[in-house]
Length: 250
Image 1 (cartoon, rainbow, N blue to C red):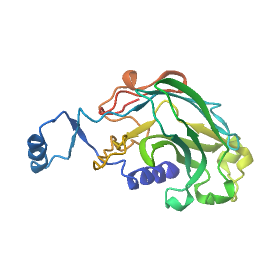
Image 2: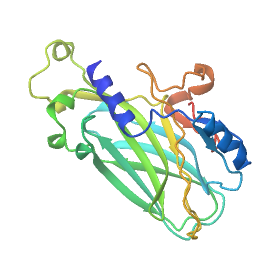
Image 3: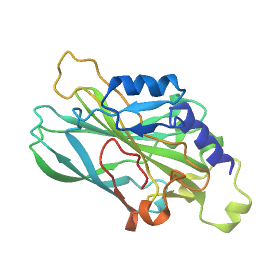
Image 4: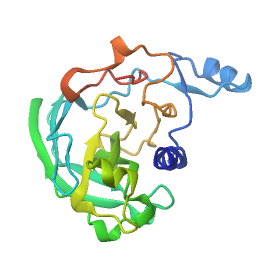
């Protein structure tokens, strides 16, 4: 429980606790009126569309020993040719207390990307255990998949990760110094949290508009309170992402 609480603190620090009401308000006057009424609203522009949509993410080899590589099968779609590379990263949150313990496990450049649907398996080595604080080794943390275009992050997929001892004896009497060889890593694949950012895809002089589409994760899962399990859970560790400018509730 303590580890899960630390993970919640981590997510809140990164802005995931902000609750946005997604309102189709093409009229700026209505948007300002909503703000003046004390409602934190998000102006959704019908003219700004992401050129890349993640269609599915499947967590492979899960659960597994802590030292096994992370493996994600990612399916994405480009609505038009992209002349520059997409940069994908896997980031392991080593501690809820400080970002200095974050580890970029791997990054890969994909591109130029033609229009159409694409799939690849993104694999990264397990985090360096010597860089993880001993108090954060066992329990709940977070792993992130991010994608950027022209140095602008436009999507982030986050999963809770539970690291625990398989042996009942070690669970009851854990060693003072974590034994990573005995830890099992379990990614809570059915309940991801997806954050999308509006970016400047065409490298024009227009100011970038950014929005975060998220709610604060609940203690037992990562579903927004207004989503039902039948609607939100994807089978077999798959992530089915709904269209941009709507609240994600896998």
